[in-house]
Image 1 (cartoon, one colour):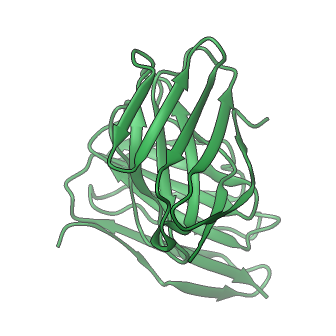
Image 2 (cartoon, one colour):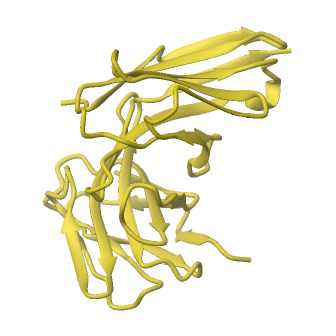
Length: 112
Length: 114
């Protein structure tokens, strides 16, 4: 059973546009929500993360929006660039646990 | 340079053979992890280790084995009991377990069973 559901599976955006990737979870014990970026043939790297005590976190062009009541969180990439083309994974975990639960990934392509 | 190394990058194996994937880190991290990545399924945890000589099964441990004899090394053996071993394998490490600790990933090993 997928603990974290991610959509869309793939996304094509024009350069300068906004990319939006959504994730949803059921386990209310989750309290840490990172996003990872993976380029082809490489391992994922942490992009940005949020805890549920805030509704939004912004780092440069990347923003996480978090809706605790809806159990949803999303990644927004503003002014998308071709260099942002990669696969993005959302994840969730419990502070008392040792495991990250990853979404199925979104392949983002930014067209010049 | 500090980081995680995995070798080999590509690995081919015949059915029925065991194969060991290497993972080494020089970040002085206590915790290490092995994930399997398949298209459309994200990353799934195989095994993790919080400390030397200790490791725990993840969600898909069947057909795999690990050892943690040294802090910097966490090799994964894919045994012949693993029914569908062809996949991309990722090793990761973190300062400790507990979810606020960022996991750092290696470049991965792509295993193909012929």
